[in-house]
Length: 350
Image 1 (cartoon, rainbow, N blue to C red):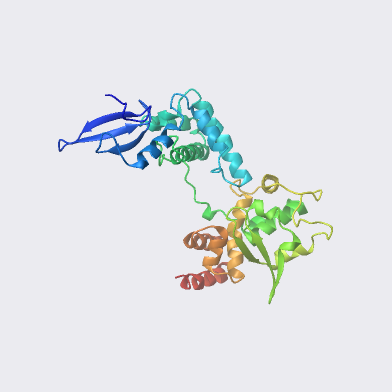
Image 2: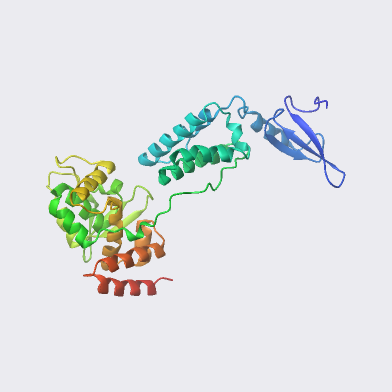
């Protein structure tokens, strides 16, 4: 078919419709991505030329490899802002690029690519969490490629998952904390106490300073902008947390430090708790992060509503209620009082 009436490079295909009429499909190049459909052989809409210019600027499939696609994503503004999140997606994205290093990115426009991605994920079938995470990050990269026009589509949405866990029933009970505190050094005890009293993530705990403490009409509270959700959290200071704050040496800028008084990383804070958890012979399912369940109960007792607790934790109201209810069941000394307050809080949720 003569193409003299088309911009140079356009590939036009006529397809007959069921009603006998014709519909023209326009591609940026032969075998390239489709950028326009029209009833007319030569579209007159100015948007046609704009769409062609944008499609022609995209890399041709044979020249655009999967590693290039991953590199483009890792250099893009679509990367998360958090340091830990960036490191995670970079690690798994590079694994994705290495496995498909000889494949042009366009293969993911084919249905069979879904099976290829699942076969690659199966390399981690011994670790369901890793299996799911590599797939999650691969799909994130593919979604970005479609949004940026580097791919027309992909077929890897909603990949099946192996990892299923409900951590709402994993909490630090009073007995756990007592056993932990009996063997752990002071700097690690302070970390666990602050986590159980505030519900803050390790990344926020290690940044706490006396400057986060502010006066209230009835006492004190912490005013913290959380690193993950970038929202202000106003956390009542319980007696246990007040002791941690009050015993911080005046010369220290940070409330929580390592044994030498130096700054912690989120990983070191979590590892410190894990190491002394093991020495206390507690369940290996317990993590520093699970102190958030204990904190939810503390915050309920301190007067926060279920909705406020859920918002602070980044949970649903139902999940927050389930966590607190489980904590009450495994903490006999607090069961009655906690369940009464929980019932009252549920009654106040719209």
